[in-house]
Amino acid sequence: MCVNGATYLFGVYSNDVKSSLGYDQTTLNLVSFFKDLGGNLGIISGLINEITPPWVVLAIGAVMNFFGYFMIWLAVTGRTAKPRVWQMCLYIWIGADSQAFANTGSLITCVQNFPESRGIVLGLLKGFVGLSGAIMTQLYHALHGNDTKSLILLIAWLPAAVSIMFLPTIRLIKNVRLKNEVDVFYSILYVSLGLAGFLMIIIVIQNKLTFTRIEYVGSAVFVLILVFSPLAIVIKQECYSQKQFKTVVENPLRIESTPLPAELQPKTSPSRARVNPEKPISCAKDVFNPPDRVSIWNYLGRVTSGFVSEIFLTKYKFPRPLMLTLVLLFSCVGHLLIAFSVPNSLYIASMIIGFCFGAQWPLLFAIVSEIFGLKYYSTLFQFGAVASPVGAYILNVKVAGKLYDKEALRQMAAKGLIREEGQDLTCSGGLCYRLSFIIITVATIFGCAVSLILVFRTREFYKGDIYRKFKEEDEAIEIKAPTSTTIASEPTA
Image (cartoon, rainbow, N blue to C red; front, side):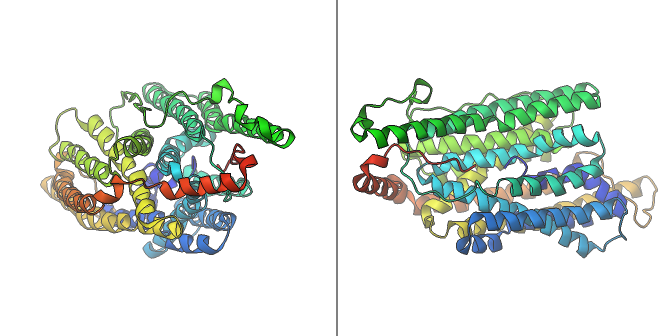
């Protein structure tokens, strides 16, 4: 998941695509639309996952990722003839669609392995995807300095290599749940919060100071240490599970009296836990340009919505569709701040939009799994994301792109300039996106209304115990095989 967010880095190298291939903003937005289409339209990966093990889906995704982004790198660096627009759209669609294959192969598998903690699992894994943009930015600085064209090559080989490396570990496991399962997830959450905090601090420092290659390498090494640190939690849990298994085999009667070690004992029940990640403060002037800063808020939105929605659901029967409605409504504040160019509000707007954008995904995918079940979840999961590229095409290409180009041409005409063929269009000032963000706000309010209808239709469902089926299955397994009740699930991520 930490390298599965290449689509979020499009803003870093999009200027290279625009200048190298002579695109205007509308054409660039069209390429961006196919990037969003590939990243969200993963129905094929879902159907494949229904009939094959997860490693097949991951392997296909690795091949697609390398091919798509490698062809883009060849085109941008001039190593091949200039491709036509439809060819660039095809390349970026193939590369971005590999993200759907990686999500299906790993994330869906984890949700099916931990169905009673699906909100937490979705929030945690989607949170790491949100951080992936900032993580890969640090790695590319360490390897290639400020050469953004080389970032495309990094995006081509790194996610593919990681997927191939972890093929044997991603699999479905049918075992009885551990009572301290949630505490293990919270331990991983704390590590991820530390990673997010470090990334925010190092990003602020890098914008204030000029880093040398050695300093970039040092920060990247520390990021990698934090990325791999959850393995220590998993290894400790696995060692404890093996010890418990040995105890059960040697003396089954002692199973009930074997205490958990202190570090694994539940310190609070999931219904009492509170996730209030402290929001770091950035001193950067332009918070929208480098996507790594927005990735931090994206991450916080994902983990917060995943964990908090699970707590509210189990303790207060607070329906997830209602939380989704509130998130959509809150995002309108960020849109309006940008639309009306409120002074000194760009940083706050980026926080709100990034947080709300991230918070929507765990809620949406958890709602799909709760209403339709997990039997065909790998396919239904993909349908939940189909609306995203459709909305992106209408709002980004047909609305924002055309309005931006129109304002840019007006500004050129006001200066007495005439645009030459292939010349970039650049718009300055708050008018460039004002009308676009007003339209986006209206569309979001309409989405809130639709979400409220879902809240009304599912209110009785969420008043009950939505996890009763899985609890009954666990109890049945315990009755049939009482000696295996303390054997933990093997790590799946």
